[in-house]
Length: 116
Length: 114
Image 1 (cartoon, chains in turn green, blue):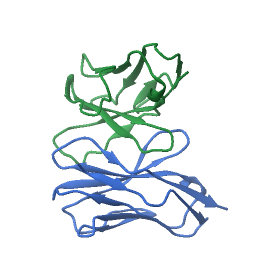
Image 2 (cartoon, chains in turn blue, green):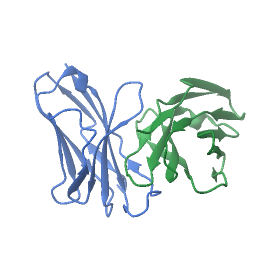
Image 3 (cartoon, chains in turn brown, green):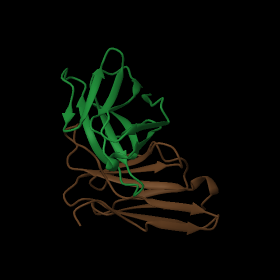
Image 4 (cartoon, helix red, strand yellow):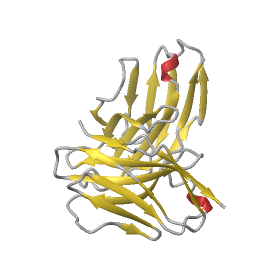
């Protein structure tokens, strides 16, 4: 498809396990964003890539969270030693070009992560 | 830091009627962008409408329009001729002119009554 693709759609893990969430942005989109959306809340920014460079990771809640985009396309968000408070929907978004701030971000369907 | 506030957790409207969703924001910047996103149960955020702060004219997209009051830092969304497919969570979002990340409000759940 032509949209942002995220996998898996649902992920259940036991507390303490590591998880990896994948995002495949729209082809040609330079910018890629990760957001965390707790139940009943608005999304909160986690991190931002321009091509393969991670330009802003100020929203990552702890050093257990790690994101990468090694070839400037697909990105992976990894959470190590998961905790119950990590349970949320993780949204990925991409946009075409960073030079114009009014370029909209296009979102995927998100991954719902549940930590037992 | 910028903040976005949506004071209406839930709103409901009769089909074909008009509804207005409220949003206020706090910023010291003069260059910024404002957005309304719709999130149906499928979870995908869908852009409804956007407004550049430097533009005085309110943005419109078919049945959707905004009332942008820059001095009051208010950015409300008006939905005319409401349709059942408009039922969703609506999020107001802010983006700085020098930053890329979106700052979202808490959301308003809109219900359309047939």
